[in-house]
Length: 518
Image 1: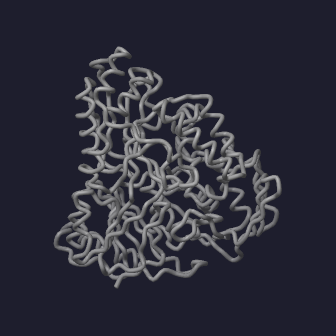
Image 2: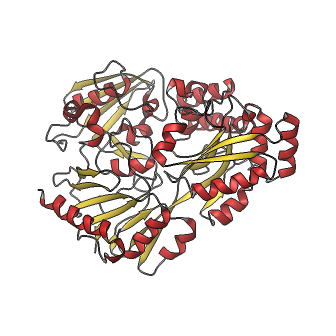
Image 3: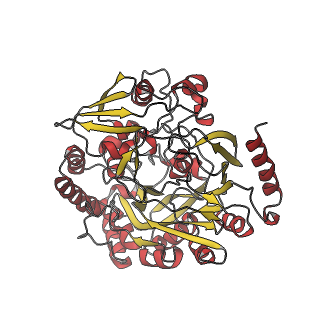
């Protein structure tokens, strides 16, 4: 048995047997309390930030976000050039980089990755039902010019292209590992990142070990163990007892426990929206008045102050204020007005309507979803709507919501953490993003004007023009109310004082290469 994996395995077996008695995690092994079991470790198939937190330590992209920002810098590509018409991006690649399986990283590997993602006839195209290949729909062709040069040709100018390359969907995987493992690649990943995949024990742990030959310098950690601990209170107990070194998404009523007393509390604002998807295709929410009524009926101030205990702000629309340049600060959140809500419901003829509401036990950025769901259910009962809650584990929840709510539910919780103001509305509000088109518009919202604005904004290379288009889109969506706009979260995490060199990123990723344990 590999010495590192064996040590980790033995120590983690002790932790699972007696977590409260474990006084210290293994030396030079960082143990992270995750919010859910990962669905896959294949970047082409993953959609949840929970999984991204692992991927960003195993893989690299051509570019990456700068430390503490959402601006891009070189990674596997050491430089790039953009043609005057914005249609061609040429990348010069780092030489001498190898994948964890020992095969070379080169332009052909990049070409394979994007062909696999975008070509439905590619032999290894089976990357899951909802891959985020939407990020790269503007790509017309990818060409390996030579071993160290790769050229992307786009079908139209696409402003978010570089930013999307830094997103996990743009991470580069080993072609030979894909060919070897085929549909099981997501359980046997191979990248070029600072840590190599070692082990995945379902519902227990994912272990990654140090890549001693990492092109950007080896980590001082021997390994990282990602433990899925779906119950927030159990995560807190494990953190307090020393069973884990770090936890993400601290429940609001536990935040104060980690501000000192042997722990460090980390907070970082980022582009996050917590909302309710409303089924605009059928049932009561096919009527805009009822969708608006829900926005008036929910006491978001109480949710933010009492349930979330000040860890978020009330959302005014689909674009988070973290995108300051594109945010429409003229929009105000729907005020809490149950009388207005009841008036709209009665006017639409849906007084006493029975609604099915999908709630998750926990998932990426979902912000105390069960208490939030119960509070929303109570608010809607006050205006005459009878809400039945169905609660699911995160991956089961996604399997029900992503294919669309038609014929199943009237509303569902959801949260997105994004890298560009294009991302969330383009993937979840366009008519072309309905589930049957492999998009994430699970409520089937459709407005041709919104479609036009989003298409124009992603093609403009003038940021001021893009901003105007996004602000207009926000006005229309705010009025159409395809979602109930709830909150913008300030992400958080806790570490033990023995953990050094960690900070949260506005991207919501966990970047752990430079972390040490004292």
